[in-house]
Length: 145
Image (cartoon, one colour):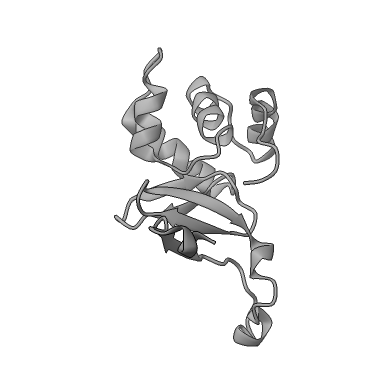
């Protein structure tokens, strides 16, 4: 995600605009996931959110994340290990998965400039592109250039 992240103060209005009641647990979960440039799993959200009080149940975390996906606030990405990760960047984009650090990085869709998408998807309306490049750091300086 290259643009500015949402401020914690703007989250209440955002949640209300998509028809989500703004409970304290939902606001805490939204603030955690919407103000970071990370792709977190539900378990990671549960762990981080419960480092402070009051605690939020695992069921509430999962249900809230699923609600946010249903309302278009988040999208999901499946990791190489089959774990669902929650992505706050709902604009069309690509992912690079750094295998060594097991992290995902957002790449703007315009990096596909020149890719013949219209020709490949002729007769169809593209609703979403899921493309993840799985990479490792180069061993030699020549490969990195």
